[in-house]
Amino acid sequence: MPTAVIDGIPTRYEVAGDGPPLLMFSPGGFDSSLEGWREVGVYRRLRLLDRLTERYTCITFDRRESGRSGGRLERISWAGYAAQGVGLLDHLGIGRAHLMGGCVGCSTAAVLAVAHPDRVLSMVLYSPAGGVKYRMKQHARFLRHLAHAEEHGPAGVVELARSTDAGFTADPRVGPWARVIRRDDEFAERYARTDADRYQVTVGGMARLLFDRDTVPGPEPEDLLTLDVPALVVPGQDDSHAPSAARYLQECLPLAEYWGVPVTEQTERSAPARVLEFLDGVRE
Image (cartoon, rainbow, N blue to C red):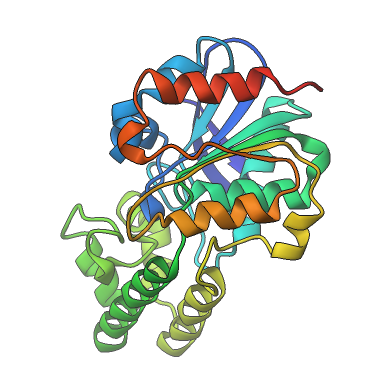
């Protein structure tokens, strides 16, 4: 698959299908690779990507620090995740595109739309990650990693990350840069030499600022309330994808449509059809 260097970070991506561009922010939390659209949870069952490529040019990619994309040791923000998407559009010469987020990808899609509404035709926000239990889970994950890093140092994190295939979601001890540590020897060497106290500050601040609310993290509600971008919101139904998170987006987005169908009734037949109905109804 091709790779684009965006703000110094290699980004693996794939372009499939034909039609208007649809930039897709992958599900999977801190393991948000492009394969997530076919392999993760509800998306595997619904086969959304297969249907969407019939009428749209679908652009999928590995989020930075995920899959085979690169990364950088810094306090990562939602704006940084959104900048990766904008950079990929620029790399492909695409001025405006539809956006689709799955799970945590909804946060990045919404942040991109707020920052660059002129680049966005519409948004599909499918099973947005959020809710009080989601926030608590994320903070607990970072705390476990920071405890391991405090005891063993960044060099110990490198040693552990290279001894297992688990990602940050499955084993928080390996941290959010585990994928890059395994693939990039130069990055791993720099990471291992990082000052331990500085590392604690960087990662602690990242956790606090990424997951600072009990609903959908990322965009500020006041920005969403003034965002004139058509959106389709589809709810999830578990501790990481609380229905309240989807309702929050419906409440905040002036041009939102809400597909209030329970997850058990979101099927391979009904879900792609509803998404296509929404996208086809958007006019430039």
